[in-house]
Length: 246
Image (cartoon, rainbow, N blue to C red; front, side, top):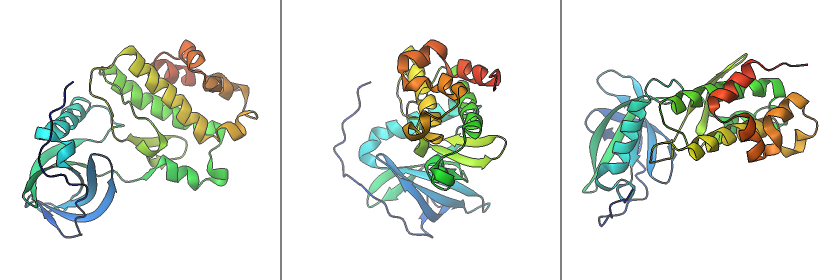
């Protein structure tokens, strides 16, 4: 895919204060984060009082609206995948003489997996709880794969923990890809899922003492071994559902 050149004004921060009105429909409540292509805010829909998330794209990262349009279409296509954020609408917002795209979606409440793990004893979760985390992740990614897509950027900072207990209620952020999924993209997602699990239960420091059932999943993080057992997220999920724990 050839990206269009941007010859306009570069904007690297919006820094909207609380109370700022966007598109005449939303009031900024608080910043939620910023990345390479955008800033995200908690916003309140003026007509209903409902809280939403508003993603504002830096113009140099959204030439002719291509990036925002891609995200909107991708999320709409994957709207039946519960693990992903639900896209709602897009608006145009003026900012210092530049037209900025505001993408509105559901507001996700929870905390990044990175922060969740930091609060756990030893900054990790037990192996059995980790299996529940991995099962929830594999099921969510299976839905994405079944739609002919992939995530492409699975790491603990992109996993939001909404609820946990006997199971996990999760959301995934920031699909990072442009083309239709190829086999290697699906394989990357599977290996990233196993790596997330490995890290969540303590990583290299605790791996030697993990039960053999855990090592049979992690495969020492050797890509060829992982993919010889789990070619897709669906296969990984089925393996977990039939796991014999001794």
